[in-house]
Length: 123
Image 1 (cartoon, rainbow, N blue to C red):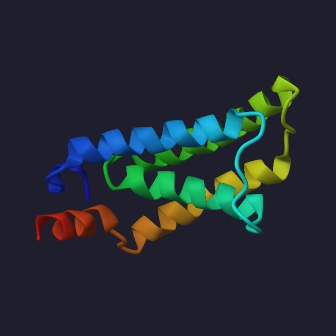
Image 2 (image 1 turned 90 degrees about the vertical axis):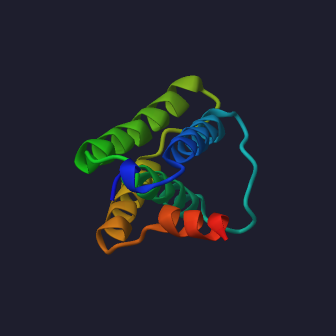
């Protein structure tokens, strides 16, 4: 699957970049909102699985995408440590990378939720 199969690819790209920016902002703000009792490691994994699966439906170079997202997760953790406001955590890096792998696997098994969303919107 690639952008060419999607009727609203430009919108999906835009929304994907907004999600990525939101994740970066939440990752770098001094005191992000809590999501109840959900472990922050699960939140990291979910966020990066969402990013990977979202952009993998739009981009053809998935290995490059996966590597960039893993590097982003590492970079965010380094920036958190350097800020003095948040802690640098290796387990967060692992959760981010795990999320990327999960997102990759979801696409590999055929999950195409953007196509599904387009069908729902078209009704």
